[in-house]
Amino acid sequence: MGKIIAIANQKGGVGKTTTSINLSASLAAKGKKVLVIDTDPQGNTTSGFGVEKNDLENTIYELILSECSIKECILNDVIPGVSIIPSNVNLAAAEIELIGVDRKEFILKREVEWVKESYDYIMIDCPPSLNLLTINAMTTADTVLVPIQCEYYALEGLSQLIHTINLVKERLNPDLDMEGVVFTMYDSRTNLSMQVVENVKSHLSQRVFETVIPRNIRLAEAPSYGMPINMYDAKSAGAEAYMALAEEIINRKDD
Image 1: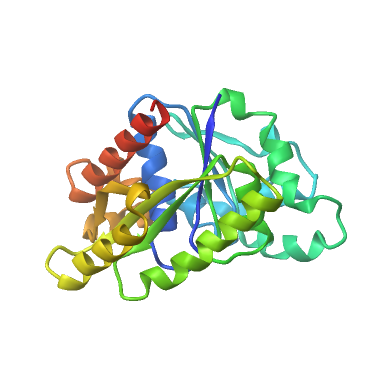
Image 2: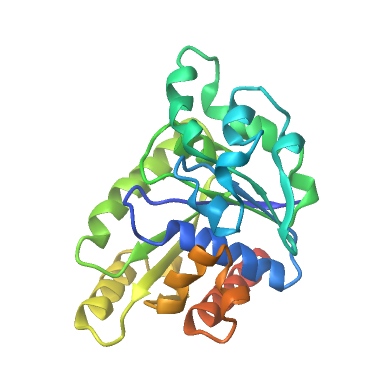
């Protein structure tokens, strides 16, 4: 049965999409079958896999509004081992269109039930806000993975996010757990990066991944070529870091 991981942080620019794309591709490179669900109206995860997001007939928007089935909107094997439920700007209207819909927090969960047995991992890339789409991701997920940029305000957003995760756990999804925090954009040359890591670890000792994702120019370039980092430059520091993170996640699952 597939493990469902929501990748969430209400702060933008922390590496959610980068993590969604590259962690999924790394898990696939290790022989896992992965489904990525893009719940961000910007659709950056979709285009990061080389999918032309504005030419699609069926996306997560149509799925949420019951205009297509989940199987109709899955793009199979966009790279070997990774399939995707794509997104585009249409999704921005979904929240308004769902006003008055019964049990709207569980729409994604109901749909994913149909396919979750077919995958080892389902990764959900969340939008950078705590809205209905993020809530849908968290009611669907088994765990939440939180990318945190190594910068001064990292902890500020984290406490708010953990509060939201706890609320969802209390009211909507009692099985939801914290997968862990992964540090992104780490620069070993700055004291600040090290201080942020130590600070967060002191608050969340048992939930911090050992793998740290470095600030890496190749990681930043890869999406413009529509490729995950392990296909764009497999020997880069970014590719090696995401392969190590995938290994940690696989080992955690087996604990």
